[in-house]
Length: 168
Image (cartoon, rainbow, N blue to C red):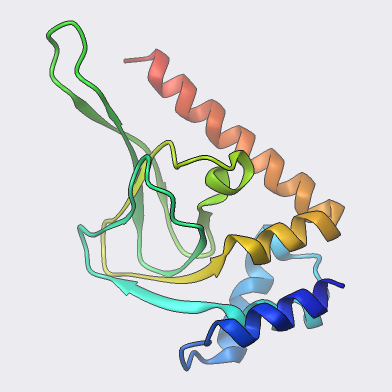
């Protein structure tokens, strides 16, 4: 079932000429995917799109759906949250986290089925693998381990975001 869905998605998305062996090795090092069979990982490789963003580029914009799950291949990104102006105080942008190779983002949008609660900005030249949420959703539905790990990471990140909001 999962392999069939990944094949359908692979037919829709091009791999963009990436070095598939390197991408496969990257996916094997991402803790979320560590226990997946190689055939499933190969399906993800087939649909992954490599994207490169220059430093200071907004990759994900707060409150704007992307439909994409990103895995950092090279570079560093900042997760920031823009707070609206209140009671005469100006709007502020708070740093939430810094992410690097083998880390991912876009999971909260996927888990909550809602627009992102933060923006992600490339701090350096940033190369990512972009996977459609549908592919990750298929993994979540078919693999309890992926589902549990994604929920645990997502809820931890949401708590960190809420904690940062309270400290302002």
